[in-house]
Image (tube, rainbow, N blue to C red; front, side, top):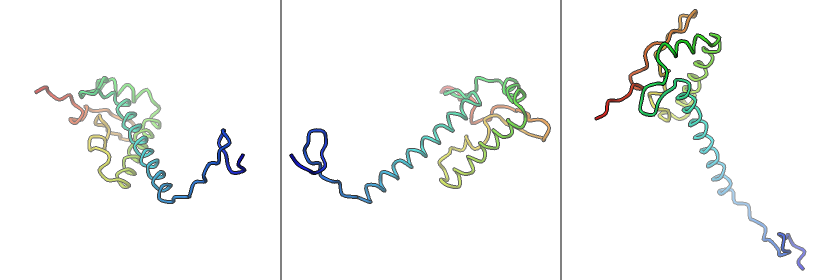
Length: 132
């Protein structure tokens, strides 16, 4: 019986040579997967927040979206929108062009006068497209 490193059956297992390129490749693949995961999760959250439907439109009317925003503490609604804008700005700086134009701003037109957040119409890029 061998005295080298063994795996279950008692046979020697050759030691692996360190391969810097393979380790670097694996770390880059993991970083790329993480970036895709974060971006896809943010998009899913954006779509859910505004109730956006696959074929365009929203499951929320403008009045319903306004009621949702009004039901939140104003600071929370502002924080959610600010966090989203900051995330978009970060991604745009780090990887320009990765986030599609239609995700660059809220799906509904919104104004904030410091006292009230007002929800406007669903933006044109999110409107249902007529069938051709």
